[in-house]
Image 1 (cartoon, rainbow, N blue to C red):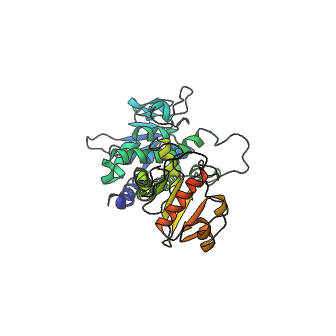
Image 2: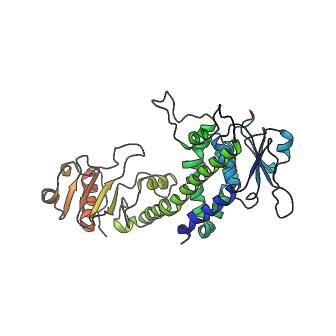
Image 3: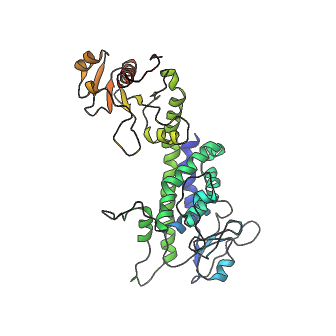
Length: 376
């Protein structure tokens, strides 16, 4: 149930804080009071805005302490010194003082350098700094009931950084995805779309703060959608793969076959779980599952994330065959097909597809001694 209400909870938070005003050094501040009677202010720079401080401000306003804060956009040091927290301006990174700038020459912080248990070594932007220090607290609030599960929070935290915040950090710091000259330019990523929301140079009446609010709404919606997708789709798929890994020795003694309870996107999860040493790297050769037509599939595990090479392809003599011809050659009833490239095949029944997997293991490894194969 908790996963079903995530979108609604985040939407309410998003609508709430976007309705609150912002100020800049050119606009008189409206008083925003917290419970102790003091004004709470989030400081960031004025002028052209970028995706990192937009996301940083959005994230902070999800926290109870800052949900009613006004966003003060200025480069005036005296005004910034009176803010409760400052992001992307000021030339200081000091978590104890709530200062999160990354532009100063002395700063080279990465997720890995601040949190050595994390692998990412890209220089952080203000978005990454805020997420690094407050991301888990934010996720606990947004995930509702499931926010009490430390393992879920940890898994989602890493996924959101890897697939959402990391890109924003890299782009803001000018870190290229790859060496060499790009064949084309991408101008539709979230950082580019935030940039396009800035007032144009020749607008006669510029309202930067209004545009900043629009950018926050857009970034917040995408952040909301990403978390919703991870909680309601990505995480359940991971659970299915984890369960299959735990039960793989109930399918065959060798543990080289995964039988999924139901089809789900499994490749990324398997590779990630291998990286996490949940299962030995390279051990799993085939994944079996029931398709939408209630027939069964055998699919080879790729040799890596970015290759079409298989760890162990379906037998060469079966490739390109179908139905009775394939069943007769293999000696397995109910065969439907094997793709010509040998990466996937099908059978009408669970037992049939299991037999296909077992014979592939036997045939491909006939020169490698194996213990007796047992179907369970």
